Length: 126
Image 1 (cartoon, rainbow, N blue to C red):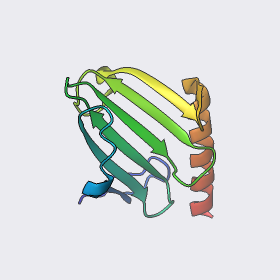
Image 2 (cartoon, one colour):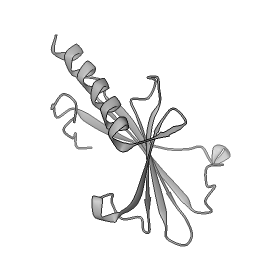
Image 3 (cartoon, one colour):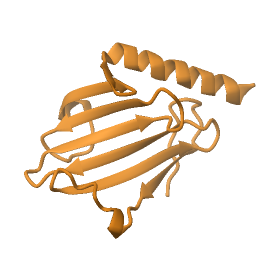
């Protein structure tokens, strides 16, 4: 699988991996549709995120992104879309941003993510 450019350190070291659920644990089809998950991890700086796409039977879709898993507080954002086309700004009807379970403004969320990425960048360049 092709490596992508990391948004934190700029290296071509971001590795996407498909997350496969066991059939027994497939309780995640809460929306009555299907689910697809990918985990992205940078092999240089350690930046990572999980994306979970859930499609409903009527064609609508939500994609949940959990950034830098294993770090507190949890940074999560959710894209609500009318279709399951690849996420582009034009396709997203609404974004929700969360720090832990508290809904926050986009600017506050992006500032927290930026601070974390600055720390990762500083750690891997020293």
